[in-house]
Length: 164
Image (cartoon, helix red, strand yellow):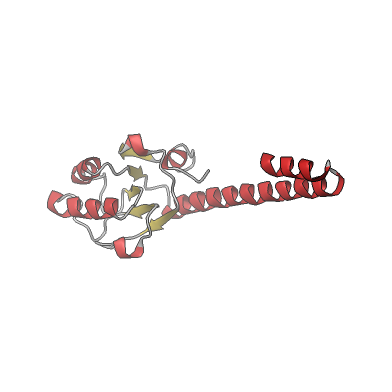
């Protein structure tokens, strides 16, 4: 299973706090991406956790932040991680309200958690999932080869194939 927002929130080293969208934390995360662009959507594929400190976004202005969050949600971004302590000491209320309105999970990233740590956690979880899939494939291949060589003929091979 790919990493989810919930698995990142429960990752003890990251110390993430859920501010909005708690009912959507089971969403798979395909990648974590950092962007300070006002419109990062052209650079997104969907399935990303977008990380930002809102250096270029007036995150306290509802008229600016609502369209930003709406664009992210419509582009398939699965969550927004907001790094505090850089441009804003706290996550702006307007950003929380916009995320709630779009049902977009909003995670507060504490100042002591580098965005790189989140990206590495997502990458490691994806790599572990790929390793499990490859390992399962090799195990299936071994079993099918064994059945073909010393099994109970075609019926045994077909049974082993069906079990896989």
